[in-house]
Image 1 (cartoon, rainbow, N blue to C red):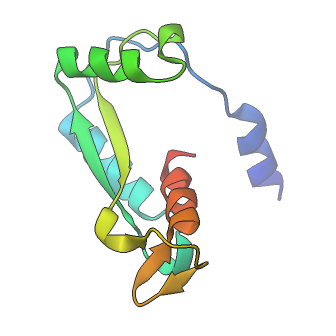
Image 2 (image 1 turned 90 degrees about the horizontal axis):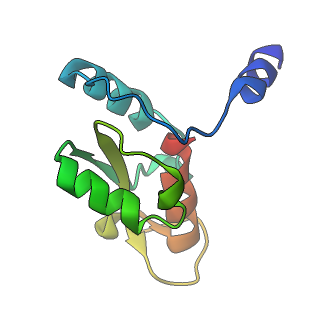
Length: 113
């Protein structure tokens, strides 16, 4: 547990981003790591969108609930719930290769953690 405890204590929310460019190799590595995050029934109900266009980044930051607290990063990786992999019903967990909406949303939060 000491490894996890150490990680949890070092975690912080970032409000100021560097303007350092992020290479495609680094982006691909981050996505590969996120892909391995746990999900309900190993459904991996997500896909990733890489945004590098400064105007689109500004629009995304401005649309975020707490966006005013952030400066614009050089890129954003959006983690999006795949509508083909979840069902908008009240069932829980996995049914017919689809996750319930609650499990889908919780699963999408995992790669971002």
